[in-house]
Image (cartoon, rainbow, N blue to C red):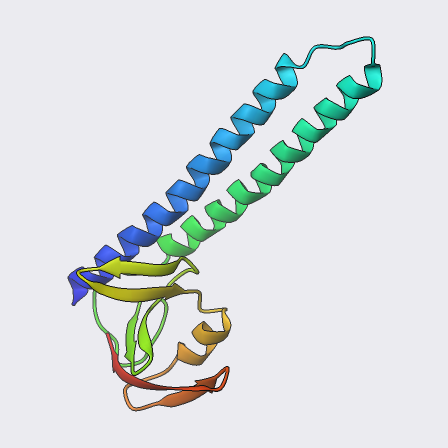
Length: 150
């Protein structure tokens, strides 16, 4: 079971790294585009192009910053040990799905099973945090029964 936590953790790290790589590539391309933009007789067009490239760079810098925050959050999560009470790093099995309480990374597939990586601050994460086997909660009209926490 501890191996499962490590594997889910690694999938989350890979998810964040892909986001970081995509943002870095987009920043590089926007800067290259801005640098390649030559000033024409229509100065406004030149300035508009440079401003659009700058906005794209700023947008991707924000995404890179968010990805870094997710990586910091992941670095705080342990990948070994078990706990009867759900906390960051726990795997929670319910009657309506399997969850990994870490970061919001969406559905992860591992060994033929699906796990939803959710942030402790997300609506479902808030309900799962502190839960133990036998607990139940309702979210969006659906009742979840916690079957196992590890």
